[in-house]
Image (spheres, rainbow, N blue to C red):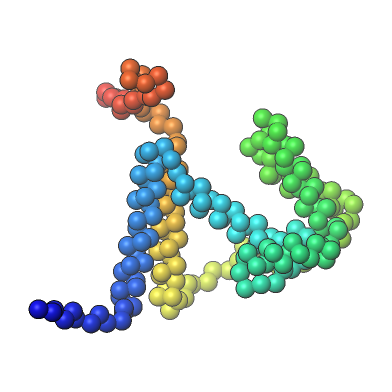
Length: 208
């Protein structure tokens, strides 16, 4: 006896959105379990992806050459192929910024402000030596006062809603990935006899 299965229809927009939301909520859940186990590959991959996005976004500012391509990887390849088109002044300023940052970071007391020191030192050097590079005022105008108040456009809320939810989920994923590595001052750790390297923490009781 043969049973005829009902033909499945095409997925609807609701099916796709439900699957996307379920998948997004699974990300922080998986990261939380990984943090409990002491292994966090998701956060490492996420941070690496964000770092690559930032690096590929400043290729033009760092070398004076604007790569072409429909995605970031293609732009990175186009940027590497056209090394001869890089501008010397912009490239030297970028290299000097990284060098000053690395040297400052090597000093333990200055490590927290290494980025600020690199920005100030290189900016002063560019101004004193009159290096021909693109400055902030060449990119956009900076007003001399606070901007005037402008009411938000409520008509744009529906179009921004999904983006806001995505940003909130990304922040939740970051918190879940980094929360397990932060110290807990209200916990008392005691050694466990089963392993010399393991530890067991119990909450500290406070009396008022």
